[in-house]
Image (cartoon, helix red, strand yellow):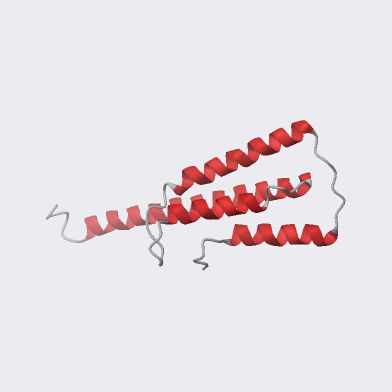
Length: 132
């Protein structure tokens, strides 16, 4: 597990950008409507990450709130991909980012549900709820 504010998504973005630049892929310019759509999608994803970060209220090993770590990491990842011109690469980055966000949120929900279930089990199994 990385504790420097980075993550798998950031590593993927860096590898993808490096690979695309090494391949020297022919880049076509996106049409104005594609650019607007892409900007909207990127902004939507960034806002979704920002909203999701509010759920992560605990601190990491360094004492930093995960909310802040997530936001800083997202900002770095978006800035790293800001000047990408290849529409295919931009679409791939957006899809990957959305997928990572969805996976993280699903893990969060699953863990939260497990904690709730464990608490219910502890309440019902011990002293019958006496002492509440």
